[in-house]
Length: 118
Image (tube, rainbow, N blue to C red):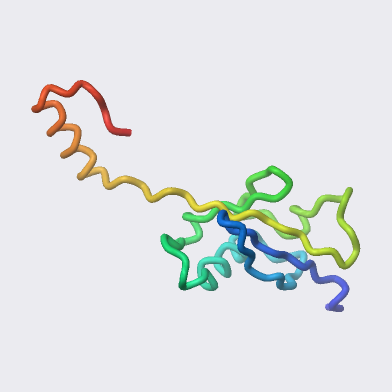
């Protein structure tokens, strides 16, 4: 494959820092991109992703599905030859532990609190 066929991607983290740019084949799927993000997450950043399910990639306002390819994610209008595509990385908040949630709710009920914890 010629290097001209490769797509250059940059991943922008929520604090404004970037990972990359790096070049990827148009046939690379989003799940593989997420694996690279998890593996290359900056060590100095807190609360890094543990799995690809902790990561959402957003391009042009759309959340990218794991089974889509880089070619599927490119925008036909606005893509410049040789330009870098910036994808935004959003981390999903950690899921609450169901057991701890139940204990907190039970404790609140015993203390007369009618609120629930989401």
